Length: 86
Image 1 (cartoon, helix red, strand yellow):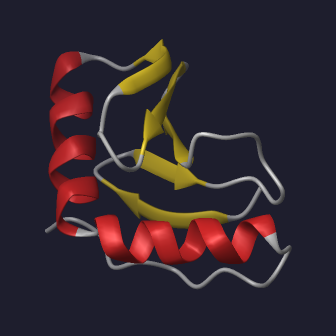
Image 2: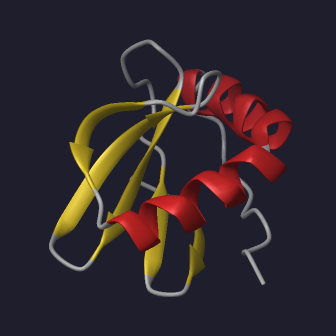
């Protein structure tokens, strides 16, 4: 699963040819969550509230890029990194 971003200890990943809806995986320590790209809703797992807030802030700023990467991942194309939250 390619890592597409890392910031403040949060690792964002996306699987190749993953199931719908379009989503990404966020990991923070032993916690993990699946986040719907279009709605930014959690569709699985959980993160601590501070890590979740940072993840949603980052994803909100990069929704178009995330959707583009989702399309590439579905086609098993290489994924570029997205700039981290600063």
